[in-house]
Length: 199
Image 1 (cartoon, rainbow, N blue to C red):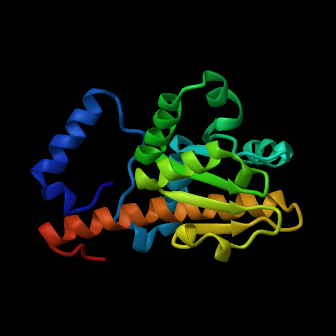
Image 2 (cartoon, rainbow, N blue to C red):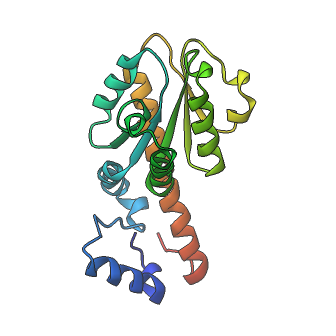
């Protein structure tokens, strides 16, 4: 994230130099241009989304839901407990996936009538909450968020009429908005340190 004010920061320059040295800069977003050339800068966020990890906690017989959703989310790194992680049979593998989403993604918790019967579901849900990850709750089988008070504070989507397209749009838009919010929070911190950016 670049701006006139960030250029004044020795700390930002130091971090950027290190990132450039290790070839870790994917792209640059000009914060000052968010006012005047917003569409151009926001389009870059779509590129950044390709670096997002989503961990699906899914215990249901309706595998077609996550299979179709994963196709829609092409470009995201998808981890699924129902295949690669479950076969490994290790709590450490689950923790590794949750930690990865904590740093650069979201846990997508699918709540279904099948999942409510699985102790693994409750264990993984609790781990995600304890790690304070960014959680997206998807409610299946006509379940209501009111039935789960511990999940009410998280962003939730009610999966209706098997509409995979709408589910995809809701998840994609939420992830994009959260990324934009992170950028805006970063800009606010820089502005507070080095003065307001002139638009």
